[in-house]
Each structure stands twice: as structure tokens, then as C-alpha cells.
Length: 379
Image (cartoon, rainbow, N blue to C red):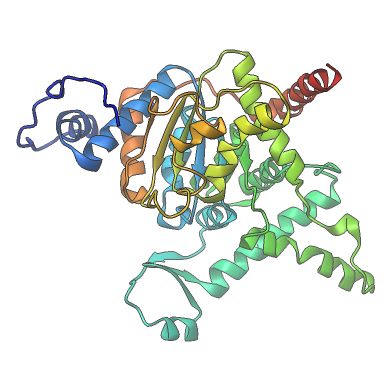
């Protein structure tokens, strides 16, 4: 194997770290982490790359896997939205569901990961590692809130015949803004307020999907029928999700706006975002080089089957990034540790940006993408 010649001693000398009282996040990242190795260095690179995304006025997507909202990460996401640092979101239904607990003041408490789960179940306590949630006062209460907001939207014809999960969550976020005691504590509400589209491509894989699937049954019971009626179904369209997400990327691309993504974990949210470039180039036949900047904060291993939809550099072969080894970094860290530091660094070092408000223009830019694809077909 041939190796390119290089100066092996071009890197900065490593010295014992200097920790001082009263250090800011910026000083910790720039003066400590950036002079170290391992994932401290990767975290510093991630902070700098996220700042670059913002300073370049990139279209920034946040992908959020797992259940990060139950431990309060939504508060950081709200700050990013309010400052214009995040333009669209792809997440799991779990994160949207548990996010709403805080807006309605439903109990979510620190617990104990060594607790007896049999005892917890007997007392209607649900455990997410070291977080305790009340079955009746939180989960069942949240289910009823979601069902009520969704049913009212259906009755008022607020959902079109075909709609994406972004359209559904815009409606739900508006409902949280209108009916909750603390809407400022929900990133779903903040996203709706600032027109930040929120896609949940695995809609059925959460308590939101479970709860809304009950609405046709309620309608049957009220009507005296035993057959489900199609008009009572809550069915966000996977086709609309694929087209609208690709439209955000396409619109940015044709307007020469760089694109970046902060991936919190992996899973469906990561892969759904990363498929937008192949959707545009491979399926629609419009050349698209992929995301300019990618950060993934993860603890997954790269050697066990793709690291939740391919390692970032592996994504080059799929057309998900323009060039392997450039504009991307992977800190292998617990997201609850790494992501708040990245957010705090951005708040200390970046000026607020004007929101791009893609939520307002989704129909127009989706039509823009469709017309560009039709032109390709006609040729």
C-alpha cells in the first residue's frame, strides 16, 4: 500500500492541559480540548465546524435519534432555533412525544438506573435508564392531549388530503403554543413558531403514532359503526416526507447555499437526512453532491454494519457527501455530554441569524423540485 509523504511533526505540540477557575466554554474548547487528542480533540473540531456552518449561513439540519428530550436536551434545541442556528429537524417520534411533557407540566423526574423494574411497574412508573415518568399523570395524559389536538385539526380541516410529517408537527406545535402552560419549554412549539420543519419519518414508531391510530376507533364508537372510515385516519405521507426534505436540500443547492448537519446519534433520522442527496441525484436525475458539513455525535461502532446508515466518509460512495475526509468529524461521545457543549460554544461565538423559515415555503420549493425533475424526465 502506498502512503503519501507528509510532515509527521506538523501538528501542534501536546502539553499538559491548563485548567483555570472561571473558564468559559470557549476557553475549555479552544484552550484545552483543542490541544489534546482522542475525542476531546474531535469535540473541539465539532464545535469549530458547527460555528463554520452558522457563519457560512448554511442550511443546517439537526437529526435527533433515540430519546434525548426526556433528559432535557430540548432546551438547547430551543436556543438553537431561536438564534436561527437550526433550519430544519429530523427526529424520532419519541423525542417529539416526550418533549411535550415539559410544555404541559407533566411529571418527568431523575430516577435510578439500578431501580427494581418490577417494583416500578407495580407503581406505574416508566423508566428510561435513570429517568422516571408517571404512566397515568404523564403518558396517558399526553396521549389524550395529542389525540384532542389532532381530532380538532381534522374537524377544522387543518390537515390537507396529502400531508407530510412536517405538516402534522406544524399543526401539533401550534396546538402546544395555544393550549400549554409552558410552550417555551417545547422544541416542537418553538419549531412551529419559527417555521422550522420537523420531520418524523418513522411516524408509527412512537406513542404519537400509537395515539393517533386510536382516533378512527373512537370515531367508529361514536358513529355506531364497526368499520374504520378513511377520513378518520391520521396518515402522514412517506412520499411527501421524501419530496419535501429533498426540496429543502435542492432549494439550498440551486441558490448556492452551503448545507450542514449535526447528527445526534444515528438511526432513521440520520439516514433520512443523508438520503436527500441520493434522492435528488440517483432517483430524480439532478446532480447533487451531498452535505458540505457533517458532524455526528455517537457512541456507535463503525465495524458492526454501517453505523446507522453508513459512516460519514463511507457516505461518499453513496453521494451523501461531496468528498470523503473533508468537512466532517465524528466525536465518539455520549450525546448528552457532547451536544450541550457544541450548543454552548455556538451561543458564545456566533451571532444570531435570520431564520430561513422553510416551513412557510415548503409547498413552493417542493413544486420547484417537482418541476425540475419533470424537466429531466421530458429530456
